[in-house]
Length: 214
Ligand SMILES: CC(C)(COP(=O)(O)OP(=O)(O)OC[C@H]1O[C@@H](n2cnc3c(N)ncnc32)[C@H](O)[C@@H]1OP(=O)(O)O)[C@@H](O)C(=O)NCCC(=O)NCCS
Image (cartoon, rainbow, N blue to C red; front, top):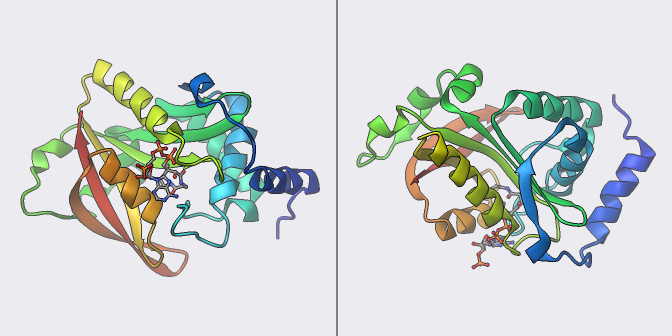
């Protein structure tokens, strides 16, 4: 069993308690994530990805707090591998977004397109080239301040330059619905493209597949 390093868990708790941290949203910059950002990214993931899942505030599926080394290695690898991995920061790091190109995504999820029950009116040609936004997380207590929108805008600006015009993103609706994510998809004008069932940790998860053309 992995034991959480005391300093690390203290920092996580401090961040959770620091809901009063004043973030000047005008100073928030979004940039590509670098290897040195692993700790900050892991810390943000822990703040919204622990054992308990909060439907209202939103959550990440994994329990990042449970296995620090595994997840830090995971983020390190993804920072090096992925073309579209961003961090948002002002005085502290406050959010990240991790997205895959079609090739990168299908390498890890080869049956993804076939596994989805696509909506009858969804044009499947839109899967010819796409980006999948796999994870977006804003530090607990800092949501609803426009940080997620800034991360999405940066990604959209970058993929348009590469002539990629299709974005997919998944939202969990069962066993615990992610209401913050559902609301965010609506606000960002995503449309429902399909649904998929995913086995994870001995449970079946239901994911809504959202689509946006940019
Ligand atoms: C979902 C998430 C990425 C949105 O980022 P954000 O910085 O909070 O979003 P923005 O401030 O840019 O946009 C605000 C919109 O997001 C949605 N939203 C954000 N937090 C919300 C909450 N706690 N409850 C309901 N809706 C929420 C709403 O639609 C909101 O619009 P409104 O203010 O008009 O109601 C963020 O809440 C988050 O990281 N949650 C925890 C992790 C998570 O659920 N990740 C799933 C990724 S989609």
